Length: 484
Image 1 (cartoon, rainbow, N blue to C red):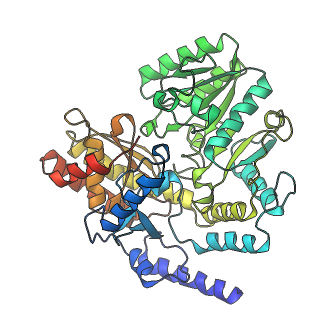
Image 2: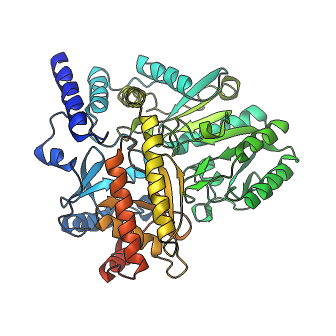
Image 3: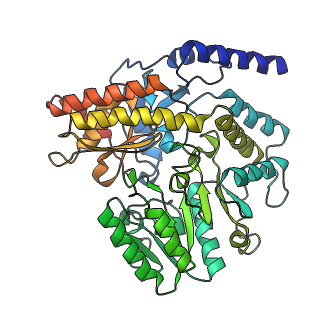
């Protein structure tokens, strides 16, 4: 077994020298098509192809509408490096990464192997009742890599939603107050308190009271005027003395990849401290190095009282999330109130621990920062070249949003994204009226991938500027681009 591992490590090193893109994972028992996939984009048939369409029809028969918000109607089949292949054999550069989850890209055998070995040994212990070493070591690592030099504890979860819920519960229990402030168009999860705290009315209508005084929403500080108004509104709410915590995304994700004005979060932290209100930092989408630092809060030099992480924590190899917070806050919860049967699942936490090790070993946070800056500057050039198409490129690291001008066509964002996927770059789209293209490549992506993205965006912007987007693309948008 040791001989095999050594051999794979040698293959990886040689492959990186040959390809030079920084986007080659370990190679282990992959077929020829997987090897070919890592070399680049290959569109054989205009998507969605016939096999994807068959899957889509089967999906409609058995999956509830609330459980599907498809982008392009494309069924994915396998992945290699920074590329994914659909059911019809088309290969795309992945710039969606399962909504920021598959941060390492695909086919990292050492992560899959860590999961497999743990499952062979003992697949589950019911950690809340019978602890295991893997979960304790994982929690120790999370304490080490998250902000704050104070005493911290960890609560392991299964998804960003349930961990966000737990963070709100802990804040309420610790402070004895019920009020939660969050931002309009924030997305914090799709369960209970996490959903109620999210700033999309469509999620809560008919389920939660939109006028619940315990959940107050303010505008995200996208401009200086927004920032001043939000701080003033926040202080007005804090003055009533009923607020437990302020819930924030440092970079607003599903709201449209919105970056706050400089120094806003430092000022917010000072304001919250003055009123003895907790700061909960939602790093579910921004964390694990995506923004060019381990956590988006690191860009602001802000230390939250509670940080919530998920998505990329295990790079899609297993569902896992975590709350990391001040010991006294998390310990204020009554024992056994955060007991989920499948938390602390040894294969899952083993995979997640290996993901963290890889990010540190391969300097992938630095890669996201450096290649992300190159990508961002290239996209800003396209923005300046086609102001009639692109309103703004914004973001940090490998979390970038491209806002598309929708004044002439409310579907322009979806159309832009769909045209790019036809060219082999698989984006997402988010924000109000889906006007923002979601640029979320794996943090392993190199300059080669950045140049492909820039070229494709430039080519598509040129087509849109000249009115040359094919009618067939628009037709497919109307038929398959659902979004939410």
